[in-house]
Length: 149
Image (cartoon, helix red, strand yellow):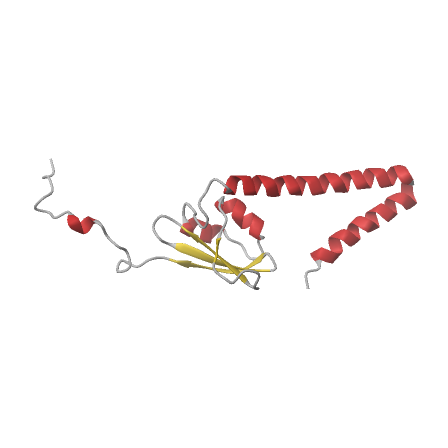
């Protein structure tokens, strides 16, 4: 069970009650103003992260190896999207838990991230082997290439 969904609203209500008992209605106004500001800051951050992600292809990251090194357990999906600046490619059935997202870079390396209730539970990096890379350089033969200066 995710206790944050219970504890954060309960803490907000407790702060409002404490403010009323200590300072009356002016205290409630101050605490409610602070809570609304806090929620607006989080909403603004979420919108900024999603705005940055709109300009990138889904599931693309500049370097899968660097993403793998930066990932920390229990990071939120929003935090990972902020790091990659792209939405992940959903690999699991929609609405199923755990959710698996993939980010791939230009060298076909990819990171699969498993999220349980929006928190990173695990991740794995997969790099292509030399046998799996399709090479288009086979059309250029040494005889047809220009000599080196």
